[in-house]
Image (cartoon, rainbow over all chains, first blue to last red; front, side, top):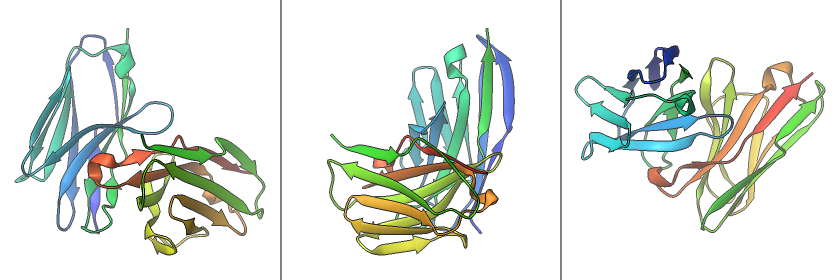
Length: 112
Length: 111
């Protein structure tokens, strides 16, 4: 059974801290791994990592894919209260319909 | 540009009542469509996906069903709701993984 596990499940930090969120996966026919940020409603897309693009960066956020270890990390530097959200990791399970298998998410709370 | 509409935003229904949630996509043709449910502490779970009109695949056995009567319309239904059907339901569409976009969601509370 395809599985995505995220850790920690929740994290509380102070503004300015750097955080690392973890995602490990077990899926057949891996194609890509995606990170989403979910604040109040729908998740919004952050990064997609594939075999040809194992590292992505956007501002204070960056992500790396380790295909050997079947895992990925999402780093956020100089955190701000606006970074408070649930961060979801998802992996494409099989080809054709581009289904995504999601982890349970990491709830990040950034205190002022 | 492509947009996805999902309604209603919130819904409170009694146990045993029917359910119909609708999702429509604009600005694209022949998208893949998905229904996800997010239950507390369980992450996003894929319920149904569709690659074309009338083509529905179910990922988990449950009290729900889905239909795709038109290319850009995806409907989630139930004949009789259970308490366990409560949750946050998200519709999504994609043409490729980078086009994977979620609707704004429906918060369903079954009482």
